[in-house]
Amino acid sequence: MSTFEEREKSFEKKFVHDEELQFKVSARRNKYLGQWVSQILGKDSDQEKEYIEAVIKADFAEAGDDDVFRKVKEDLKDHNILDEDIRKKMDELNEKAKSDFK
Image 1 (cartoon, rainbow, N blue to C red):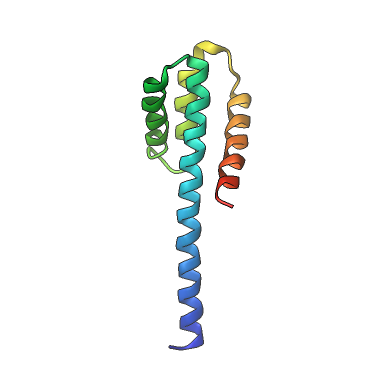
Image 2: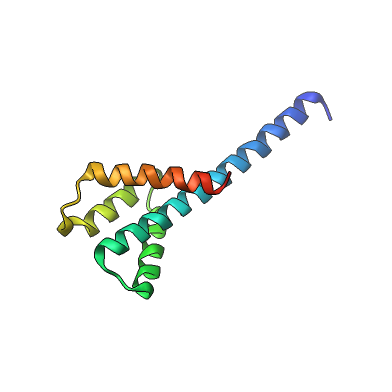
């Protein structure tokens, strides 16, 4: 195998690893976000588990975070939480999720 082919395979492996890690971080962030929203909505532990699953599934609607944001925003519409506060919480929980995998 040539050096070029070895480098190419190495880059492919790194790409796959990075994508898997990003998926795990996003799922963990969505779990934390679901827990946060569940507390605000006053859900019990069974309802919280279902809600967390719904938030995680919402992330599969489209690429990026807008699908999750829209779901959470809709669910919190009666709780006077600003869009900026939701985005800020999502960023904060994303950093927390990243630190879980370090």
